Image (cartoon, rainbow, N blue to C red; front, side, top):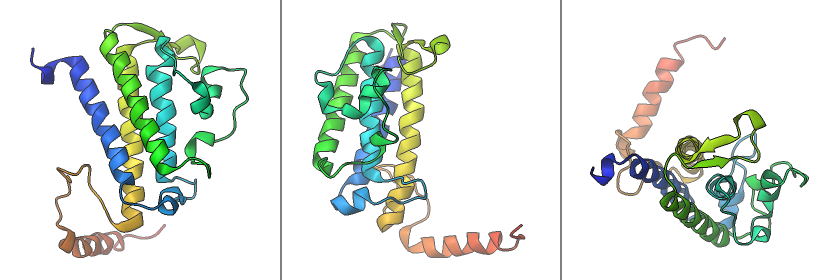
Length: 204
Protein backbone atom coordinates (compact mmCIF):
# COMPACT_ATOMS: atom_id res chain seq x y z
CA UNK A 1 0.00 0.00 0.00
CA UNK A 2 1.39 3.42 -0.95
CA UNK A 3 1.62 6.01 1.84
CA UNK A 4 -1.10 8.07 0.14
CA UNK A 5 -3.55 5.18 0.46
CA UNK A 6 -2.61 4.15 3.99
CA UNK A 7 -5.50 5.29 6.23
CA UNK A 8 -3.35 6.56 9.09
CA UNK A 9 -0.99 8.37 6.74
CA UNK A 10 -3.92 10.00 4.93
CA UNK A 11 -5.49 11.23 8.18
CA UNK A 12 -2.19 12.61 9.42
CA UNK A 13 -1.49 14.31 6.08
CA UNK A 14 -4.77 16.22 6.18
CA UNK A 15 -4.20 17.04 9.85
CA UNK A 16 -0.84 18.57 8.97
CA UNK A 17 -2.44 20.66 6.25
CA UNK A 18 -4.72 22.26 8.83
CA UNK A 19 -1.78 22.89 11.18
CA UNK A 20 0.27 24.52 8.44
CA UNK A 21 -2.65 26.68 7.36
CA UNK A 22 -3.21 28.00 10.87
CA UNK A 23 0.43 28.97 11.30
CA UNK A 24 0.62 30.47 7.81
CA UNK A 25 -2.37 32.71 8.50
CA UNK A 26 -0.41 34.29 11.35
CA UNK A 27 2.73 35.03 9.31
CA UNK A 28 3.75 38.63 8.75
CA UNK A 29 1.32 40.23 11.18
CA UNK A 30 2.10 42.33 14.24
CA UNK A 31 1.32 41.24 17.79
CA UNK A 32 -1.51 43.78 17.73
CA UNK A 33 -3.08 42.46 14.53
CA UNK A 34 -2.80 38.87 15.73
CA UNK A 35 -4.60 39.69 18.98
CA UNK A 36 -7.33 42.08 17.86
CA UNK A 37 -10.81 40.55 18.06
CA UNK A 38 -12.25 40.41 14.56
CA UNK A 39 -15.80 39.21 15.23
CA UNK A 40 -18.58 39.97 17.68
CA UNK A 41 -17.58 36.83 19.62
CA UNK A 42 -13.93 37.88 19.89
CA UNK A 43 -12.34 35.55 17.32
CA UNK A 44 -8.67 36.41 16.84
CA UNK A 45 -5.80 34.67 15.05
CA UNK A 46 -3.51 34.11 18.00
CA UNK A 47 -6.40 32.80 20.08
CA UNK A 48 -7.16 30.20 17.43
CA UNK A 49 -3.58 28.95 17.63
CA UNK A 50 -3.62 28.93 21.43
CA UNK A 51 -6.86 26.94 21.41
CA UNK A 52 -5.39 24.41 18.99
CA UNK A 53 -2.44 23.85 21.33
CA UNK A 54 -4.94 22.57 23.91
CA UNK A 55 -6.84 20.59 21.30
CA UNK A 56 -3.72 18.78 20.05
CA UNK A 57 -2.22 18.10 23.47
CA UNK A 58 -5.57 17.09 24.90
CA UNK A 59 -6.76 14.71 22.21
CA UNK A 60 -3.42 13.24 21.16
CA UNK A 61 -1.89 13.36 24.63
CA UNK A 62 -4.12 12.92 27.65
CA UNK A 63 -6.71 10.86 25.78
CA UNK A 64 -4.07 8.16 25.29
CA UNK A 65 -2.28 8.54 28.64
CA UNK A 66 0.56 10.47 27.00
CA UNK A 67 0.61 13.66 29.12
CA UNK A 68 2.44 16.85 28.23
CA UNK A 69 5.81 16.99 30.04
CA UNK A 70 4.99 20.24 31.85
CA UNK A 71 1.32 21.12 32.28
CA UNK A 72 2.35 24.43 33.89
CA UNK A 73 3.34 25.45 30.37
CA UNK A 74 -0.26 25.02 29.20
CA UNK A 75 -2.35 26.06 32.23
CA UNK A 76 -5.42 26.65 30.05
CA UNK A 77 -5.57 22.86 29.52
CA UNK A 78 -5.89 22.02 33.23
CA UNK A 79 -9.68 22.25 33.37
CA UNK A 80 -9.93 19.86 30.42
CA UNK A 81 -7.83 17.08 31.92
CA UNK A 82 -8.73 17.56 35.59
CA UNK A 83 -12.45 18.11 36.29
CA UNK A 84 -11.62 19.47 39.76
CA UNK A 85 -9.82 22.46 38.23
CA UNK A 86 -12.11 25.50 37.92
CA UNK A 87 -12.59 26.53 34.32
CA UNK A 88 -11.82 30.12 33.35
CA UNK A 89 -14.18 31.07 30.55
CA UNK A 90 -12.50 31.21 27.15
CA UNK A 91 -8.96 31.40 28.57
CA UNK A 92 -7.75 29.25 25.67
CA UNK A 93 -9.12 31.66 23.05
CA UNK A 94 -6.85 34.67 23.50
CA UNK A 95 -3.20 35.32 24.28
CA UNK A 96 -2.36 37.13 27.52
CA UNK A 97 0.07 40.04 27.57
CA UNK A 98 2.87 37.64 28.56
CA UNK A 99 2.23 35.09 25.79
CA UNK A 100 4.01 36.27 22.67
CA UNK A 101 3.06 35.15 19.18
CA UNK A 102 6.48 33.58 18.64
CA UNK A 103 6.19 31.60 21.88
CA UNK A 104 2.66 30.36 21.13
CA UNK A 105 3.51 29.35 17.57
CA UNK A 106 6.59 27.48 18.80
CA UNK A 107 4.44 25.83 21.48
CA UNK A 108 1.95 24.81 18.81
CA UNK A 109 4.68 23.23 16.70
CA UNK A 110 5.87 21.30 19.76
CA UNK A 111 2.28 20.28 20.50
CA UNK A 112 1.84 18.80 17.06
CA UNK A 113 5.20 17.00 17.33
CA UNK A 114 3.91 15.50 20.59
CA UNK A 115 0.75 14.47 18.75
CA UNK A 116 2.69 13.00 15.85
CA UNK A 117 4.61 10.82 18.31
CA UNK A 118 1.29 9.47 19.57
CA UNK A 119 0.10 8.76 16.04
CA UNK A 120 3.35 6.96 15.23
CA UNK A 121 3.22 4.88 18.42
CA UNK A 122 -0.39 3.70 18.18
CA UNK A 123 -2.58 1.76 15.79
CA UNK A 124 -5.82 3.29 14.57
CA UNK A 125 -7.82 0.93 16.81
CA UNK A 126 -5.78 1.77 19.94
CA UNK A 127 -8.18 2.66 22.78
CA UNK A 128 -8.28 5.94 24.64
CA UNK A 129 -10.59 7.99 26.84
CA UNK A 130 -11.43 11.68 26.46
CA UNK A 131 -11.57 13.05 30.04
CA UNK A 132 -13.74 16.06 29.20
CA UNK A 133 -16.39 14.20 27.18
CA UNK A 134 -19.57 12.76 28.76
CA UNK A 135 -18.89 9.32 30.24
CA UNK A 136 -21.22 7.52 27.82
CA UNK A 137 -19.08 8.51 24.82
CA UNK A 138 -15.68 9.15 26.37
CA UNK A 139 -14.23 5.80 25.25
CA UNK A 140 -12.64 6.27 21.83
CA UNK A 141 -9.91 4.95 19.58
CA UNK A 142 -7.17 6.76 17.65
CA UNK A 143 -9.19 6.61 14.43
CA UNK A 144 -12.14 8.47 15.93
CA UNK A 145 -9.86 11.04 17.58
CA UNK A 146 -8.07 11.77 14.30
CA UNK A 147 -11.39 12.25 12.51
CA UNK A 148 -12.53 14.58 15.30
CA UNK A 149 -9.26 16.54 15.12
CA UNK A 150 -9.51 16.87 11.35
CA UNK A 151 -12.99 18.35 11.67
CA UNK A 152 -12.01 20.72 14.47
CA UNK A 153 -8.69 21.95 13.09
CA UNK A 154 -10.01 22.49 9.58
CA UNK A 155 -12.95 24.40 11.06
CA UNK A 156 -10.53 26.67 12.89
CA UNK A 157 -8.35 26.99 9.79
CA UNK A 158 -11.49 28.22 8.02
CA UNK A 159 -11.99 30.77 10.80
CA UNK A 160 -8.41 31.89 10.28
CA UNK A 161 -8.96 32.19 6.51
CA UNK A 162 -11.79 34.66 6.97
CA UNK A 163 -10.10 36.57 9.80
CA UNK A 164 -6.85 37.01 7.86
CA UNK A 165 -8.69 38.13 4.74
CA UNK A 166 -10.38 40.77 6.85
CA UNK A 167 -7.03 42.01 8.20
CA UNK A 168 -5.12 42.57 4.97
CA UNK A 169 -6.86 40.77 2.13
CA UNK A 170 -4.56 37.74 2.18
CA UNK A 171 -6.54 34.66 1.24
CA UNK A 172 -6.16 31.05 0.16
CA UNK A 173 -5.60 27.62 1.66
CA UNK A 174 -1.80 27.51 1.38
CA UNK A 175 1.34 29.10 0.03
CA UNK A 176 1.75 26.70 -2.85
CA UNK A 177 -1.90 26.53 -3.89
CA UNK A 178 -4.37 29.30 -3.10
CA UNK A 179 -7.48 27.41 -4.30
CA UNK A 180 -8.92 30.78 -5.41
CA UNK A 181 -10.20 30.79 -8.99
CA UNK A 182 -10.71 34.52 -9.33
CA UNK A 183 -7.51 36.50 -9.90
CA UNK A 184 -6.82 39.22 -7.33
CA UNK A 185 -7.33 42.04 -9.88
CA UNK A 186 -10.70 40.58 -10.90
CA UNK A 187 -12.10 40.16 -7.39
CA UNK A 188 -13.75 43.61 -7.05
CA UNK A 189 -15.81 42.94 -10.19
CA UNK A 190 -16.65 39.45 -8.94
CA UNK A 191 -17.79 40.78 -5.55
CA UNK A 192 -19.81 43.53 -7.25
CA UNK A 193 -21.57 40.89 -9.36
CA UNK A 194 -22.47 38.87 -6.25
CA UNK A 195 -23.71 41.99 -4.51
CA UNK A 196 -25.89 42.90 -7.50
CA UNK A 197 -27.46 39.43 -7.50
CA UNK A 198 -28.06 39.51 -3.74
CA UNK A 199 -29.59 42.99 -3.80
CA UNK A 200 -32.17 41.78 -6.31
CA UNK A 201 -33.82 39.93 -3.42
CA UNK A 202 -35.80 41.52 -0.58
CA UNK A 203 -33.94 42.17 2.68
CA UNK A 204 -36.65 40.44 4.75
